[in-house]
Length: 253
Ligand SMILES: C[S@@+](CC[C@H](N)C(=O)[O-])C[C@H]1O[C@@H](n2cnc3c(N)ncnc32)[C@H](O)[C@@H]1O
Image (cartoon, rainbow, N blue to C red; front, side):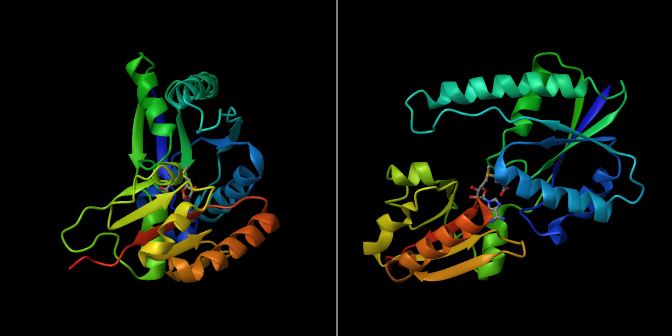
């Protein structure tokens, strides 16, 4: 049976790679590489540098696959579009796995942790459920929220409280308005501005763990323009940006 390794490689810093991830990288004959857009090119350069640095006897091949474009998240039929997108990727995966010998080992180098806002594992599990004869192994990685917390030296939860990790889209719809804190990912619209009147603090990080890392922390009302300006400048320079932040409101007690 073919084995597919889903390796979490951490959110940017090669030092985030675990020993388990490095051992797994050394087992793979084929690495499946997403090949769409400037962002993917930037992330692939980091993936390739990791392979160069940590695979001791390079015998692997790279197989590229196109990520199909997805309808905008704002459309009412967003879920359908996600389904369609996943179906297309499943077809691409089937084709790639055929490149492996029957007992071969292939690997996806998943950014951050495979359990957080990443479709790879779900697609593979769906394929397995539909009868595809593959064995799956998952290696956890350091996610962007963990990298953010470490760089700002903060905890994600307040004592005894829940942790909410959510998307910019949902926060823009008001999801975090009544929460005392939230970690926000996938935000293209700087929805943190809606907390400027709440005396809330923001801990913001872009390109976390990489040489281009930018960190800003302070009251939302005081730093939101600085974040906007830094975000815009960095996005123009790199052609893409990845940022994550935590909003923390003053405690009621
Ligand atoms: C598709 S999700 C992937 C998350 C990833 N699986 C993880 O565990 O962090 C992409 C989002 O993760 C966040 N992200 C990932 N890497 C990041 C980094 N190095 N710096 C800041 N944010 C990052 C951003 O919010 C970005 O929009």
